[in-house]
Length: 157
Image 1 (cartoon, rainbow, N blue to C red):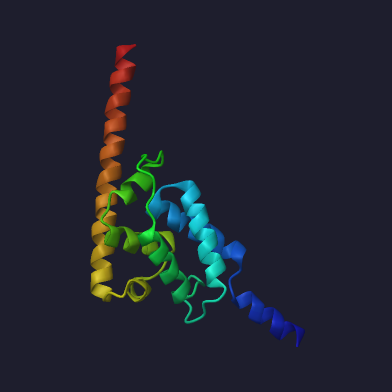
Image 2 (image 1 turned 180 degrees about the vertical axis):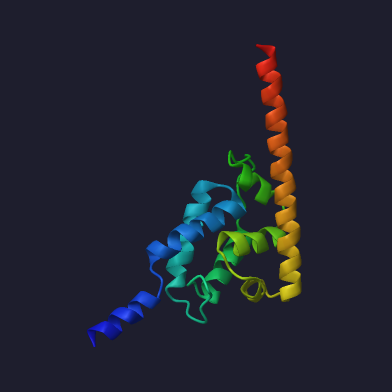
């Protein structure tokens, strides 16, 4: 009897498992640390009452949908983030941003991204592909600018 209780509780993800993933989810979508922390906590608190089907990352569909809804409603500061990746993600249209963060940030497969965002798998794939390509180009441009600036600075000395 003890072992069955232990296995049942080990199947359900704990706050210590969910909190870091939700925090990074909100950081990437919003870009503001304090707001991301507040939304992650609110989502976890509300998530205790949410049940439903589980996703491959251990979160429930309802919990992730709640997080997406909160992220879409939240407005981050207009100050640019010091994190290049956050700036690149924040430059995406909201639908691409959400799809990319669900896919890469939370590690959901495309069929689960489609479920959470209420789109088709094909549309989820397209949003992820376009968003990841835009992030790649954005980070490549930033790195190229940094490299050319560094070369000019070292040449001036």
